[in-house]
Length: 121
Image (cartoon, rainbow, N blue to C red; front, side, top):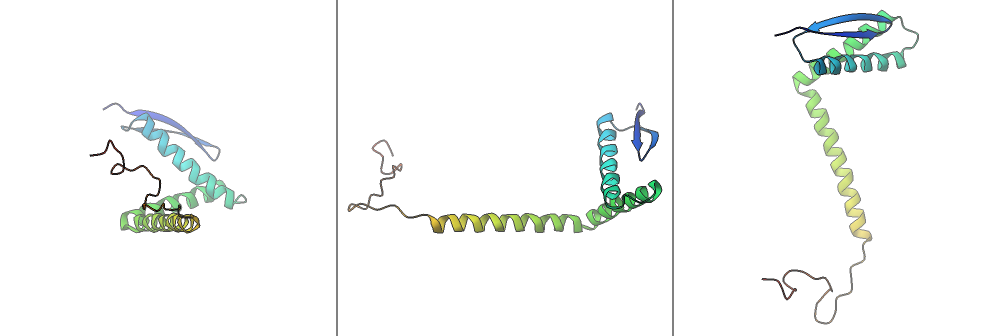
């Protein structure tokens, strides 16, 4: 397999990475690392570049270990459950606010359903 090269510029340092992976994969990795570095740099703008790089590497390693231990997945699962619960609460509130339609003397609520329709089965 042909080795691909990608030039990465991070924290004022430029390096060329060689890999068998696709150029797109390498670009995604570089982008991910740059984002982590920028995240750390935003919190510790006074830190030396080496310190920022090491903190970013520790954050990435932490994410990897949590993911491997399944903790990352359970945290995501908890977040999904929390969002789903909030959505259900909103639906419940909206349903409570909804005023039921008047039902006619014949029990017909005016909605055209399949069984009410002359064309239904």
